[in-house]
Length: 216
Image 1: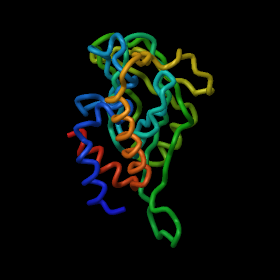
Image 2 (image 1 turned 45 degrees about the vertical axis):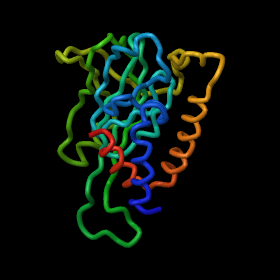
Image 3 (image 1 turned 135 degrees about the vertical axis):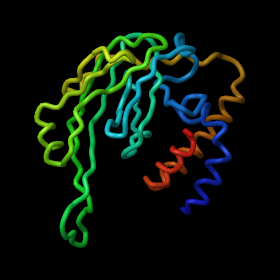
């Protein structure tokens, strides 16, 4: 699949991404961790994740479709108890001769972490962690790795711990669909399925390039 083909099709649906791309915000500037229009969605909290942090799930809702290397994203959070599962990942260029078939980079990745905190309506949160200057430092950090969540004032809100796979979050907060006609919803679902198929066939570089373009 060529880049031109991917962009041509994606641009046709770019204006519909807020409806068809699950979890994507209407402004195309953040990824929302809910579907529909639940209470609290009008003034959500925002969690800003740098490229090193790859969010896997928020309150039990998978965010893995947005997990691309070195892509910073904002996540919209409904007010209330919030559970975020994530990994920390950095990529370092190899030095010396790289043999055929070998990767040109070293990847340092943490085990899955979880952090839980009470998200406040309209608040902004960030990940805070040490920034290694070398691969060796990054690898040393993994032994007891943890990150902090801070608010816009720099106040510590929560600290992460190793994820044990046992979610404490309630089911994703998604309202039930109203009964009656659903022509618009069905149309959106059809477009979504087509977009998903294209997304799955696209390369990681095509995905990254498109998301950067869409979020501008």
